[in-house]
Amino acid sequence: MKEFAYVRASDADEAAALVADRPDAVYLGGGTNLVDLMKLGVARPGLVVDVSRLPYDRVEHRSDGSVLIGGAVRNSVLAGDAGIRWRFPLLSQALLAGASGQLRTAATVAGNLLQRTRCGYFQDVTKPCNKREPGSGCPAVGGAHRELAVLGTSEHCVASHPSDMAVALAALDATVRLRSPGGTERTVPVEELYLPPDRTPHRETVLAPGELITAVELPAPPPGALMRYRKVRDRWSYAFALVSVGVSVRQADDGTLDRVAIALGGVAPRPWRARAAEERLLGHRPEDALLRAAAGAELADARPLPGNAFKLGLITDLVAATVRDLVTGADPAAGGHGEEQS
Image (tube, rainbow, N blue to C red; front, side):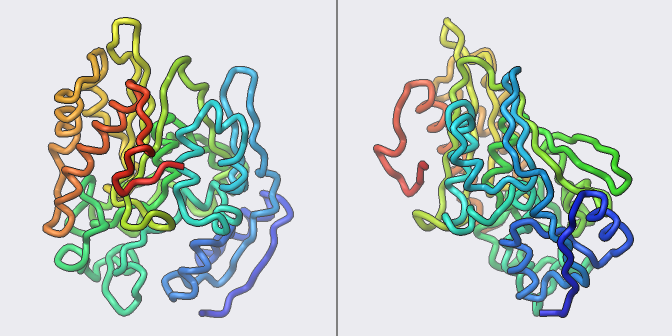
């Protein structure tokens, strides 16, 4: 590991001042991903600025039903928050489906959103990787890509985003609050936080140098909405998603869907909001043929590789089953098909 300096920031202004003028400086939250990458030699910061003690560690439930979640809130705290479990079960389920209990206790909301891909070529510094070294190539395209993306890729990168939480937040229409080094704030929807790989896969988010994620905001959930997060992976626990889905739907009195939000994980370089599928379903009864057709519409522009083409069928099955089970009240944990519910 490369030698580095460490500073624990006492406030946001100090943190920003330390990072703004140092291209080799990084923020440290829980460190569950950053430290791993430093050990591997993928991340080589000269200065690590610890922001875990800044006053962004609260979950605030507002009177209008919205929630403000501080960027330094630990994943385990958020997953166990009674208001989140009751009113946003999709989010709690996603958090509990990620990592291990020990890692969730250390990991933060902001760090979870900014964690890097687990593509093996990205993590192996002896291999070329356009995300790690622009212009060096993407051996995953012709190599091991079973776990990687089928949507939103480019010829320069097929890496998938690993976060479970980000998928749930995308389905919940969450926004991210960013603080610039000058102290000004802006917000961006979660799904717009991430940049497509195109020709510049090393640029992963819209964050400007020194910007800090201070909070995530959840709008009030639609009354009567049904929510669920489901994840398919190779192991029963402690594994990244092959495919995951976060769903929030609501049925009108006539049985049609008057609210549909679907986000996919493990299949794209960012949490993938399935807008085409939502459009096909909105205003219709969620019958199985339509559910599968809606998922198919979402996959019209998919670009699978030989080793991950199986994900297309998996996505279709998972989307259809999750929506169907929600509206019928079925419990997917009772059947068990290699997936885990938390």
